[in-house]
Length: 159
Image (cartoon, rainbow, N blue to C red; front, top):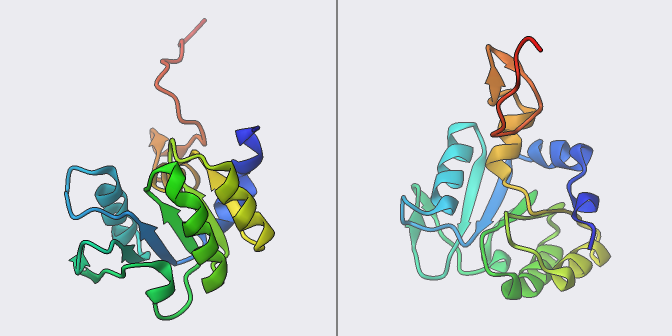
C-alpha cells in the first residue's frame, strides 16, 4: 500500500477545516497521546466528541460508547485504536455520514480504508491530526514563519 495516497495535503487541509471531531479511543489518562491530541484540539477551537465505552466524560465532554451513539453531525473520525478495530469503526463512520476517516500514526488497516472509501469518505492514514494542524495552520514554525516542514534534522547554515 502506498501511504502517500492517503497523505494528500489538500485532503488534510480540508479535514482540518471540520470543527467537530470524534476521537475514537480517547483516553482519560493524561499521559496518553490521544488525551494530548484531544486537549490540543480543544485549545484550538475544535469540538471534540470522545468515543470510549469505558468512560463517561473526558476533557469535560460526554463520552459515547460508539460513533452511532453520537447526536448530530461529525466531520472527522480520528482513530486511536488498533488496526484490527478499524473496519468496524469505518463502517460506523460511513453510517453516521462523517466526511473523513483519520487514522493516527501506526493505525493502518487496508480493510478499514476500503470500507471508508467505498462509503464516500476521504481517508488520511499514518498522520497525527495535532501535528498536521501545527504544520498547516501555522503552529509549527521557526522565527515566526510557517515552514510547512517537519524534521528533526538540523539544517546546515552558510554552506
